[in-house]
Length: 303
Image (cartoon, rainbow, N blue to C red; front, side, top):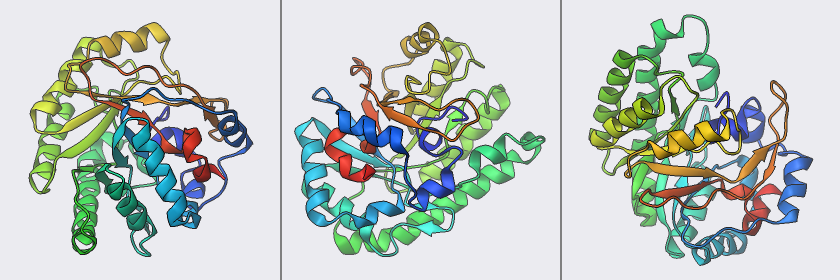
């Protein structure tokens, strides 16, 4: 997000530096030390790979994934496996971590290719005229990444339960009905070329009404996608009552991403956040927590 839970909150505007392993900052570290408990049956946890995570050994990963299972998580969504020119599978540290997650009983949804300049690109003047070509390019990059990963995943015996496209949708980018229809068609075509379901995420900025937003996300679900809606609690761009109205208008099949952080940085400043308890699981929806590195039992990811 320009307010962004998944690709946005942790990374904007420090996207490149975070992926190149610089620290999240003292605020995050101190918050992690304070601790954060999660209710059981949380369902899915998002993990955002950073290059610094390669320093963790097998025992540390084993402990992280064991703790995830003990707290009711049964699936991990890896936000990306490629980030610009960085491909995290190249020296196997990420795949070794996911192999350990699989051994601990977690299903794997593997992220594809992320563009570090995604939000800067789509918010530039004139972006609407270039967006279709740009979006098609993002999908080609992700499909190429999936094809690169497949042989190595088969070699390691790692089953993939789904693929995640790390390009977040919003009613700011898709406020116009023709653009929403076009993106639905493009995503449906991409999903048809994958061997497992395609997961995507979306967030709300108030450009669509709650009912219109819910109808749009249901249309994406009906196209065969698994849609995740970010609850916005960590960024708090929208007032709490408005966030609740969007949540209540969502159809049951749309998943809820519950943000386990609270932004502490001012608008326009480098992003900083501290862990914060996520909202309780929402009945009738798939539930997820963002993100692993904010949770106390995964503190090694923030050290």
